[in-house]
Length: 307
Length: 301
Image (cartoon, rainbow over the protein chains, first blue to last red):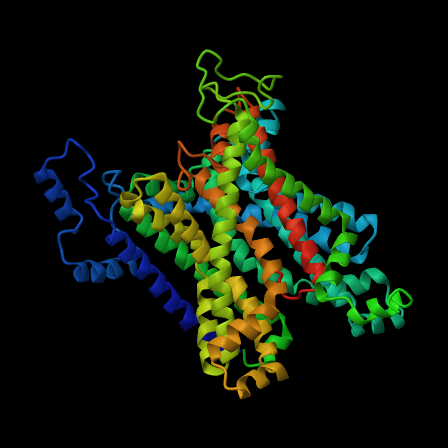
C-alpha cells in the first residue's frame, strides 16, 4: 500500500511536470508578439514590455525562471490587467470556484446516488424506470443548456432567484444545481450498475438466507461494494466540474477562476492562461491521485494485489 | 425436399451475433424510439434547408425578432433570419463535428488498443500506463490552449473546423483504446490467433485482419457513446466562444446567442436547446441499448 502510494505520487509529479512543460512551450510557440496587437504601442513600448515581462531572454532561461517562480507559487503578471499578478487572480477567484464545485458535487452525489441505489433495489419495475428516467434527463442537459433554462424559468419568469452575481446564499442554488444535475445522471447510472452487480453476489444471498432484513443488506452489506464504480467516476467528474465552472461562471456572472481562464484565452493574456492552466492541471492530477488512493483503500481486492 | 423441411434449413443457418443482437435491441422500445428520433433529427438537418423557402443568411431587418408564427415556425432572430433554418444548419455542423471527430478517435483508439493488447507484456504495460497518465489530464484545457496557440493560423472557418475535429478527436480516444485492448488481449490467447501466427503472418496483419474485426461490437457501442461526448465538447467550446465562430453556426453557438437574448426573445434559446438536448439524450440511450443488445461489458465509461 505504502509502496503503491509513493509510486503513484511520483507518477503524478511526473505528469504535472510533463503537462505544465507542454503548456509552457505551446504558449511560447504562439506566433506573433503579445504586445503588438495594440495599435497605439510603438516599437519602443513593445520592447520595453518584452523586457519587463522577461520575454527578451532566451527560451531556456525563461523556462528555468518559470519553474523557479512556479514552485514558489508565482506565475508572473497579467499582460492585460496592469499590475495584477496571476497569483493574485488565482487567490482572489479560486475560492469561489472551489465552493461552487463542491456544492455541485454534493448536489450530484446526493441526487444521483440515492436514485441509483433505489432503482437497483427495485430493478425492472416502474420504481426503477421512473426515477432513473428522471435522473437520466440530465444527460441531455449539460451546464450550458441547463444554466440558461434554469435562469429563464426560476430567475426571470418565476423570480425566485437572482440570475447574476453572488450576494445572497440563495444565489448559489441555481449555479450548483446546473452543474450537479448533469453529473447526477452519471452517478445514478454508476450507482445502479454497481448495486445490481453486488446484489446478485453470493454473500448477499447468504445474508438473505440467514434472514437479514432487506434494508440492512442494502445499507451494510451491499452499499460499500456497490458504490465502488461511483468512486471511480469521481476522477472524470472532477475534471468535468472544472469545465462546468467555466460555463456556469459565464452564464451567472460569477467572479470565479473559470471566467478568468476563458476570458484570458479569448484576450490572449498568455501569462494568465499559462498560470491558470498549470494550476488547474496540478489540482486535477493531485485530485485524481487522491481518488486512486481512496479507491485502493476502500477496495480490498485492489489493496492486496500489488496494483 | 427444400419445402418439406423449412425448419431444418433455418436451423442449419443458426442466428448470427448480429441478428441476435438486433432481436434484443428491438425489445428495448425506448432505445428504438430514440434511434428513430435521432435519425429523424439528422435527416431534417441535412434535407430541411433544401426545401425551406428561407436561406440561413437571408436577413430581414424590417422584421427583426418575431416569435414563432405560421411563416417562421421557430420565429426569427434580431436580424430577421429564420430560426428554423439556422437551427438546421447549426445541426449540420454539430453533427458533422460529432461524427468526424468520433471517427478520428475511433481510428486512433482501435489502432492503439489493438496493438497494445496483441503485443502484450512490457510494451502493453508501457502503452497502457501512458493512457492512464493521459486520463488524469484536464483535456479541455489543452483543447482551449491549442485554439489559442493556433489562432493566428486559423484565418478561415474551414481551418477552424478542421482543428476542432482533430483537437477533440485526439483527446477522446482513451476509453476506446482501453476497451479494445482488453478485448484483443483475450482474443490473442485464442486458437485462431495461434493458427494465424503459426502460418507466419505478420503482427500487423494479425492485428488488423484477424483481431480488430472481432472487436467490432465493442467498437460500435463505444463509438455510439463517443458521438454525444464529442458533440458536448464542441458545444461547450462554441458556447465559450472558443469553438465554431460566426458566420458559421452550431447548436452550441446558437444556444450562446439565445442565452444572451433569452430575457426578451426566449424562443432563440429554447429551440436550439431542445434540438441539442433531444439529440444528446437519444444518442446516449441508443448507445446504452446497443451495449445491452451486444452484451458488451466494460464499455461503461
